[in-house]
Every structure is written in C-alpha cells, then in structure tokens.
Image 1 (cartoon, helix red, strand yellow):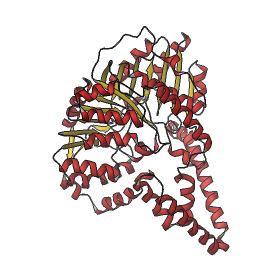
Image 2 (cartoon, helix red, strand yellow):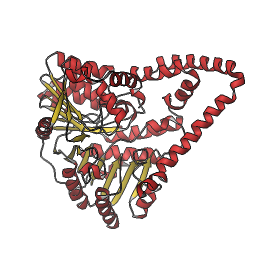
Image 3 (cartoon, one colour):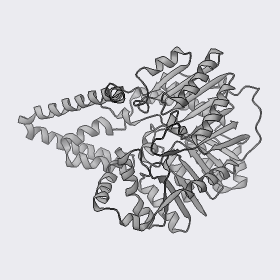
Length: 510
C-alpha cells in the first residue's frame, strides 16, 4: 500500500496527469470545429502535404522520416499536430547561440592538431582512419600516456569510484542519466558532501527525464544545500514539446583532471545488483588515468556551460602538477555525440568499426533497434565471412522495446549474424570489440534514441591492454547466453511477428 501511495503521489504520475489534460484539451479543440469539419480537414490535409515535403527534404534518418510520414498522411488531423509538436528539428536562436559558445570552447581547449594521429598511422592505417574521423567531426583527439582499466560489472566500478572520489583534492565532476536514492547513491553522496566540506569543487549534473521516476521533486535543492553544486539537464515540465526527446544520457565522472570514468553504469542500486531487477544486471565501465581524461573534463564543462549559459575558462581545470604521468598503454580517444547537430558520431563510430573489420565483431547492447544502414553493415560483414556476434538481454526491462529488438533478429540471423541472449538477466553494457585491436565502451545503445536523439559519450581504444579484458569478459558472457536460431525466428507466432512488424515502423519514435 505504501508503494502504491508513493507511486500515485509521485512526480511521474502528476506529470502524466497534466500531459493527459493537455492532450485532452487539444482533442476538444479539434472536436469544437466539428461543424466546420470539412474546411478544417481540408486545412489539415494541406498542412500534411507541407509537412510531407518538409519531412522528405529533412536531413534526418530515412527510418525517422517514414515513422512520421505514416501518421501525417494517414491521420492528418492528429498526425500533423503531433509532428509540429514533436517532430521538428529546427533549433531556436537561443539554442544555436548556446551551442556555438560551447562548441567554440570545446574546439579551443582540445588539441585539433594532435601529433598522436601520425603515430597511430605508423601502426595501422585503419586505426588512423577511425581516430581521424573522431578528431575531425567530434573534435576529440587521441591520446597516449593513459592507463585504461575495464570493469566488467557495476560492483567493480562502484568500489573503484568510491576509492578515487575519496582521494580527490581539487574537484569532482559527475554527470549521469539516472540517479536513485539507495545504497549506491547514499555512499557516493556521503563522500561528495565530505569533499565539499573540505573545499573540493564538487559538481553534479543529472537528466531530469531520466530521474523522473527515481528522484523527488527539487532533488537538486537538497544536493545544493549539502555544498555540492547541482544542475538539472532539461528540467521536465508537463508541456508537449520536442525538447522531451533530447536527454543527457552520458555517464561521466572526472576527478582532479587525472582520473575519469565512463560507460553504461548509472548511480542506482540495480547497477551494482544490490537488489534484483530484471534478473542479474550486467554492465560495464572504464576508468582512465592520464592525458585522455582531459577530454572528459572538457565534455563535462561544456555541458555545464550549456545548461548555465556561461563561458568557463577550462584551463583552470587542467590537471595539477601532482598528477603522476601514466605510462603509454596504446591509444585512447574519449568522444561525445550531440543530437543538436547533423553528425551522427555514435553511429558512425560503430559503422566504421563494422565496415573495416577483418575477422570478427563482438557487440553487447541492451537494445537492438537499428536503421537500414546498420542492418546492411552487419549483414554484409557476416556475408563476407566476418564473424559477427551480438549479445542482447534475455529478460527485458521494457517489453515493447524488447519486442522491437526481437523483430530485427530474423533478417540478421538469415544473413549469418549470430545473436545471443544473456540468460541470467538484463545486459546494459554498450561495448564493441573488433579483431582484438579496436574497441569502444560507452553509453551509446544500438537504438534510435542513442544514435539520434540523446547526448552520448564513449571511449575508443586501439592497442590498449584493456581490449583483452573487454574481449575476455565478452567470452565469459557468451558462455551464459543462449543463441537465437533460425528455428527460433521462424517459430515466433504470427501475432508476435505482426506486432513486431508494426512496431518497427514506429521504432524511431520510441
């Protein structure tokens, strides 16, 4: 009963209630014009044609266009209204101005002429092409003198994170999609409060949409009262708007500029299996120590400035002289992806790795909702003789999304792609390993939201020792996963196949 009452009076329920009222008012407005329906409908048809022309000529993904064309053409009255509210990609002058400021700061403080690129080229032309793309279009250079540590589960990362936070002397930056009050956040928050009391500059960013079910209203005030600076990305308001689509899905922690974390692990108890949610929760993360942490520092500060509308002198947060120089451990290249430009960095990193693979591609992802380009790349790689293996969850966290993921199995399996489901529970890791030489670990799912709508980040590795650890973890995960066969795909009921086919049409909007 307490859980039910807590849910009924939660911010999520209130927001849903207000959105339903707003939607009902829009419906009533439409019905109010019933006596003029013929004229009103004619106007809507005209608008649908205008929207159709705009959608077709838009620079967005073709799958995204199809998903909007169906409602706009079939039900112009409500389809056009929904598209005008949620489908437009035009940015306001205010947003463009903020974007320009943060972009210029990022370019200014990250070395855009990194000499490391030529060193990578001396080892491998393919690796140089990977890094060159990130240097030119994500403005994130490659580094040496960085030690990388891979964590195969949330429990490992949690212990390392607490240890590094406790050692902070100057500043702590945290940026997470989900925070939930409990064991994990409680222990971390205690350390943050202690460090703030010692004079350490402690800052926290969290996504309001990501935390709408996990944090109370005005949680940021509670954090601020403890001495920790806190900002909320895209504060959620019950107004129908396309801003709801863009979320800060990044997971970044930076300590004193010399230690950084990223990966799929949020600050909530299921990520460390403190309680069971969808079976065993499998995730991953990396810790960086050395030069490459500077990119994570700049990424955090750029988001901080974007939210505040300020311009920070990033050089004030360069690593202090006490930081010990790390020995070279291959090449490391942290990177970010923004939905507010037309460069799909996250997807292109994956496509570059897939298209240039020579022997094998190992992928872990919680969702497999991909566009035609990604399907074609995976199928062509498998057809060419490259071993392509993908691990997805066996226990779903979202039933509809899981149904869409399964709808993509047949075309991939028929082409020779090996798909496995992690039988102990839910796998949330977003890793790719290619030929034992290249790897990426980050926050970017194989779905439309991560690839097109969210702020994301990741870390690309070449010849780093952690690649062997990532691959070893993959093989261990594969050993407890069940392969999806052609018979499994053919044996799905006609109802599931039909529902999956319909859901695939609207997958880009989910």
